[in-house]
Amino acid sequence: MVVEGTPKLLSTSVAEDKPNPNTANPNSRPRGDEEDEGPEEGEIVDEDESKRSSAVLLQPHPLEHPWTFWFDNFSAKSKQATWGSSMRSVYTFRTVEEFWSLYNNIHHPSKLAVGADFYCFKHKIEPKWEDPVCANGGKWTMNFQRGKSDTCWLYTLLAMIGEQFDHGDEICGVVVNVRGRQEKIALWTKNAANEAAQMSIGKQWKEFLDYNDTMGFIFHEDAKKLERAAKNRYSV
Image (cartoon, rainbow, N blue to C red):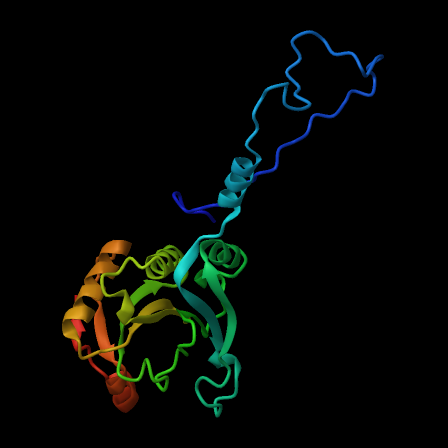
């Protein structure tokens, strides 16, 4: 799946003209033939410029931060297992090209099994409340009908890794939770108490995705203490 405007690698290979094996005289050539065997006498060829052009076309597009995909399917484990014990990192990508190579070869939310959690977090930040970077943070959450979050998941990833948020430094990562009747996409941030930054992120996220429903922001601290009884501190 390729979104219009996404940088793509261009091929620099050029097909070579091959001689016709049925030609009676391989040394003869019809008048006006445009095949060029090499520069004519006095012609200047800039080989360095040619090499530079090829290098530019093949040069990858680095992201500002490396990002890591994580996967967890807690429902497939024993109920006595500790949350996060089955979570594992999948792959870390650092360029636009690596992202698309991964995205085009992994399941989208609608194809994941019920109970699956799929994360994309800044490299070296674990998607857990206990991670020092996440400990004082919180999350914005969007809700979707089962199988309806694929496009918003992609656009969220693009906005996040493309540094489209004014307070991008506040963002830890994003997770999609696949459940029986719905899918949830949650954007995790660092400093929950920074209301101005959180409100900016929430409003921009809704604008990027053209999401019309009200969504709320829950502090991780509240979620740890109150679990499902935790209430939204902010809403947009």
